[in-house]
Amino acid sequence: MYHPKHAHYNKEHTKHPLNLVPQHESSSYSNQSTEQSPRIEIPNQQPQHINVKLLEFGHIYFFYKPKVMQEHVNNLDQVQKLLMVLKPDQSQGELKNRVIIIPKKTLPKQGEKRLAIVSQVDSSIDSIVNESLSEEHYETFTRGDRVIHSSRPLAFGLYELIEHNQNHTHLSYVIEFPKFLENESPNKIQTQFGIEHAGTMVVSVKNPQTNLNYSKGQSTSNLYNPREDISIHGKEEEIKKIFGERKFHSANPPSLLSIEEMQLLLIGTTLDSNDRTVQQWSLELEQEAHEEVDSYMIDSKEDEDEMGVEVIEKELNLPQDTLMDSLTKGKFV
Image 1 (tube, rainbow, N blue to C red):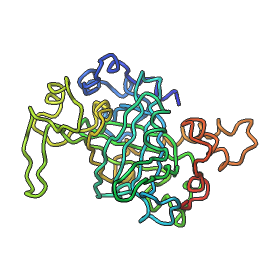
Image 2 (tube, rainbow, N blue to C red):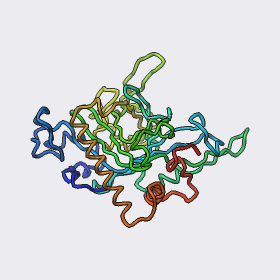
Image 3 (cartoon, rainbow, N blue to C red):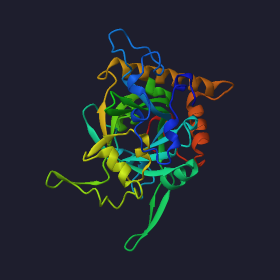
Image 4 (cartoon, rainbow, N blue to C red):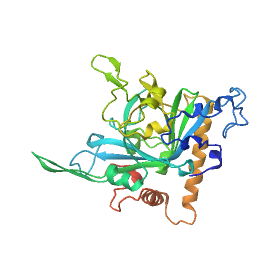
């Protein structure tokens, strides 16, 4: 997914083995003029300095996982969780693929908040498919063999992780397939999951060295005894430098999203509610998506729905028996 607008992407941060360095600290970003900054022209009413910085870009895939022993899904109540798979473009360096689960099963609407968890990080997309998207079996003492059937693809397209005003990060996406999301699709299940043709949300990362006591509405810093479910061994000082005593931090550096079991806070927003700089970036991302879809369709006799199935099967090496009707027809399967 290389595009000329990504030519100014700064790959210097990939040289650090942990990448735990916010990019605005490792570049002259704050001193750049609009002529030196990436890709967009700011309207006259905008400040002279670019207030948006590209941190990462790639492909995004949405899946839903059925509940235990639910072979066929008929409604949202029979869904266990929503999954986002981020597959960074490798022109940025050796970035790893990530699976992010959303237990509440829907993307947040404007003003809503959703907890999300980085459940798997792996450089191999085959490992992602085998461990997070395929059918699972396990044994219980009372009920015997239990099955969680394989995940169903909902949509896929392009994403960008961008820093806005140096104090928060947006995950913006544009869906390439299914194509029907370009129009109003109230009867398609994608809308039940909160997936739109184009969207953006603010992403914050929870400090793994802070324990939150929700029952009392208090938080207690535990900087030298981090949560045991998150593997940050050897990174404690870097984590402390990034977060300090704060409970949450922006997703800069984006390598914070590459720590398994890291908890995220997704905050719903809309493109209309953001300044014109963020809107312009989204329009350019949408143009890239159209160009990529056109490249898929060249010399192809497939219709758009069939082409979408062919592309996702190829990109993720999905099993041939993966149920695709949610992607092609917008219905539960």
